Length: 288
Image (cartoon, rainbow, N blue to C red; front, top):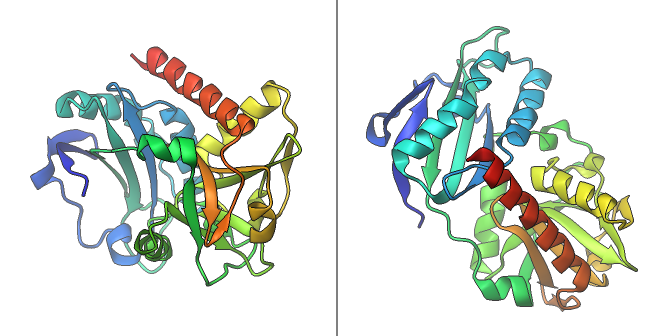
């Protein structure tokens, strides 16, 4: 179990973790009605923080929540929290919630909290041999707008992650009612066919991942064909290469889905992983 660092940032102040509280009337506490972001900390820096905040701002606007002023304070707050925690590495969690009620009121007071925990990436062999995925057996509705927000309502994801852990898998895949792969519980999904990179389009019911955005831009920049097209589990298993990606683990090759083997990690997966990590390193230098 990952340990939490001993301080938190709550509405503009760094406080001891034991004294970090939100009211019991908070929307996130009452209804799971709120937003969050998780990003990795490297050498005391949280790369791509602005990308994560842009996604949070966009979701807040779509949900009718006015949080621009408060979210503008997050970058400085994140730096202050990491300094106070002396966190050289880890995972930062940013929560945005608001005063509770069955329906969020326009102009309701918002709050932001930030905490940091230890993070241990997958073992090195996972990046060489690949990982196993399982499939969550209950499909999602295609195009459900909730899935494009990183919502505090996370019960389905946590149940699927527990199922994956029980099966010795790295993650579980969500499919939709058309039988198409949408995403993992905490990852975006990619396959490689004939040298082209393929990933589900956003309207299949998935989060617009920050790492996904960077990988698609990298692929286009280095001349790799990119297609946002639907695909099912069978096509994923027949791919030349497959991988999942997120801000914590970066790019992780997939070698098995349920009991079906996929081709071993291939050259395009390695190229994209290296190029993405180079962007991370550049962002760390910029953030020092």
